[in-house]
Image (cartoon, rainbow, N blue to C red):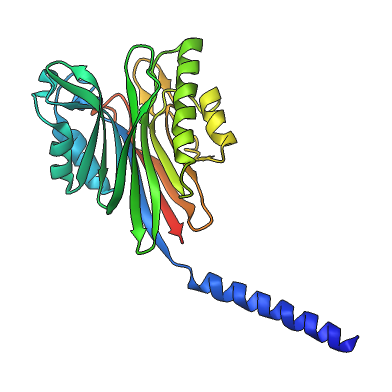
Length: 268
């Protein structure tokens, strides 16, 4: 009987030591995320000047940045590739996703990144009521044997029940694709809905954590101030995100949306 107790104690100690050793072997890194609806560079002062958005991004120096309302060679924004311009000005690389042809060019969204990209998927989402929609999904290398998904979205903007249903269908399509992978995931963007909406509840039901902005949370500063720009994350067995800081920048002119910045400790 005494020998049996000693054996149980010995096995328990071995398990604890293995767990302690495993935890000691884990690594961590800091990751800075940004989401910004840049309104194709047109400020609330009605001045078209993309350099102002570039300066904000450069100053914040994110590792990964999801941009919404981006023009490619549209006449209203001086017929330039805004993705290439912003990538060059911020010392990053970029991917553009076209929603539709517009004003002699293309209109959509972009993702900027300074981390290595393993793969890029432009996922077509169920069409919004007035505009097509897609999502940029990058697999990002964060360490030699670890990667995460970084997802940039801009969901349907239509208000009311029709808009709610449209956004929910887009969210369902997005999560269906994300679930094909077992990687930890961060989703950023202009969701065009508030935290209590059916779409945001759907993401929560699927295991995504909504990063609370605190009291200063109204990201849209148009005619009516709203909280519609969000950051969500979901951990995996290998990778966990720990929020260190979140900031919604007070920038009243450059766009009708405020830049959203989050800093994470990533444990793997």
